[in-house]
Amino acid sequence: MLERLFKLNKSGTNVRTEIIAGITTFMTMAYILAVNPNILSIAGIPRGGVFVATALAAVVGTLLMAFMSNYPFVLAPGMGLNAFLTFGVVLGMGYSWQFALFAVFVEGLVFLALSLTPVREGIFNSIPLSLKRAVAAGIGLFICFIALQTAKIVVNNDATLVSLVSFKNVDFHTHGITAVLALAGTIITGFMLVKNIKGAILLGILATWILGMVCECCGIFVPDPSKGFFSTYPSFSTGDISKTFQEVVGSEWSLIKILDFFVVMFSIFFRDISKTFQEFGSTCGALFNPELWTHTVNNEVVGSGWSLIKTLDFFVVMFAFFFVDLFDTLGTLIGVSMKGKFLDDKGRLPRISGALCADSIATSVGAVFGTSTTTTYVESASGVMAGGRTGLTAVVSAILFALAILFAPIFLAIPGFATAPALIIVGYMMLSSCADIEWKDAGEAIPAFLAIAAMPFTYSISEGIMFGVISYTLINLIAGNHKRIHWIMYVLTVLFIAKYALM
Image (cartoon, rainbow, N blue to C red; front, side):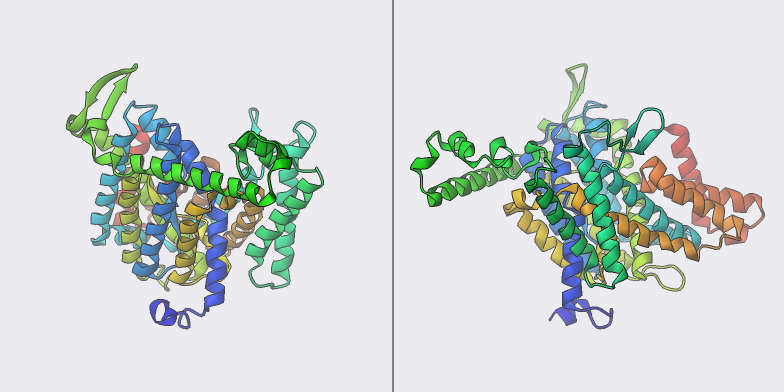
């Protein structure tokens, strides 16, 4: 049945490889289950509701991708877009989170309408092959930069913006050690790749995690108790089980059997799960209640209900979500497809319509659940590099996201320093696309370089694409190489320049 659904043999893969790839992708992007609730809760959305919405949006979007396109791409609420909703729309412009989610919902429908037409596919195909290769390389640097930050190898510096962590100026047991563990994990993963060990990326994540546990047992690594297994009871995170029990039931440990203690622990676990679903009940579908749509200025409500739809701000907000989602998605599809060798000889992606439709539907569905724009994740590249070639990889990741709802404390225990080596290695693999760029042709090479450099330096895939498109069009137009420029590139260039002019 799996062969009939996903055409494994035709894609040169097998069930075991696809499962490993799916697990690998999930583990490299499981962080969104913790990060997204933290960001959107600042906007007032119940944190537990966001957690369930994030997982469900990932499940629905990823399954749609698997069965509509048969690609190993995994979807989840996107980073950056969640921050824009919280800090830009809700806190910055003063709109309620329900109104902001409605804008995301409408944006997804507009996206879907364009996906059913040749527009989005035309944009994808109009981008020159050199820029597509550059996008893949730029994404590689971008996710490597994210990994270096996650592991605290690269930290903030007011003078130079970023710098290497100073082990003398930070607490080594809480921050410095994570950098060391991530670097050690990178070496371990690199060693396994040199030895051609199957599932090296996944094994690297597990090895780094285990190494972190050993360091914790030896007292070398002291994790933040607030991010522990039962963060409600800090003493449990620090290993003081006796004190934990007293916090929970107020009795002496010596009077209770071990079995009773674990019954209490499981009751706490499922009580928290129940609370999470209750919050999801108040979040899911809230965007369809116009009474909750409000616009507040200086703590005073100045507008509410359907009248807000008529304002220019609604279209500005919706277009902002649409614009970033469009080019983040295209950039991710280009980059990951390039490394998976899914593009044909002309740089086109077969079955792209299904992939784009899945991404669009997932955005609107995710908004209904109660989360910001759902999009295709660049971390899908980790599964592709682990051998994933079909939708079965995506299905495996979707199943793990579904399980994460019931076993959130366990899945969220995967630390950032354990997944950082995987992203660093994937970054190296994706950067290899640079080798196929015609570096002796300045008309192709300079725009490609600008696209590569802009992604990590602006912390945005879409900005990198815009830098590349604008420079490609202008350089080749001035140089008289107008025949190599697709007419859609002219349109995109005008739109991008207008965007920057009006920012």
